[in-house]
Amino acid sequence: MYETIFLDALEEDEQELFDQIDTSPLAQLNEQLIMLFIQERRHMRRVKQLEAGLTDEEKKINRSYTSARTKFLTLARRQGSRLIFPL
Image 1 (cartoon, rainbow, N blue to C red):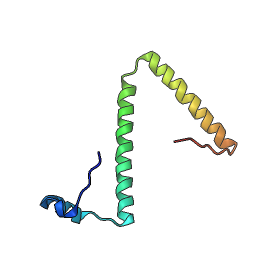
Image 2: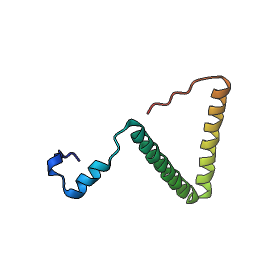
Image 3: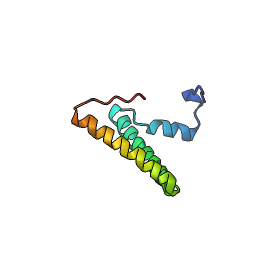
Image 4: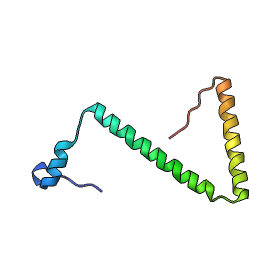
């Protein structure tokens, strides 16, 4: 959603919030790192919950995928290859 916000149109509580924002690059990076850490933690928790609900057959398939991925990464590290994954 996009909205144009004018400073003179802010409500009183919004003006207080606006004044509290630290715009220094270091503070912004620190906040971003914290948010990414929390996001990763939530993703990992969801993965754990999903893995807990797998059937025996699904667990077997998941192990085979994990095993193949681990072997590939180990081989690439030994050969000194550089892995590039598109985003």
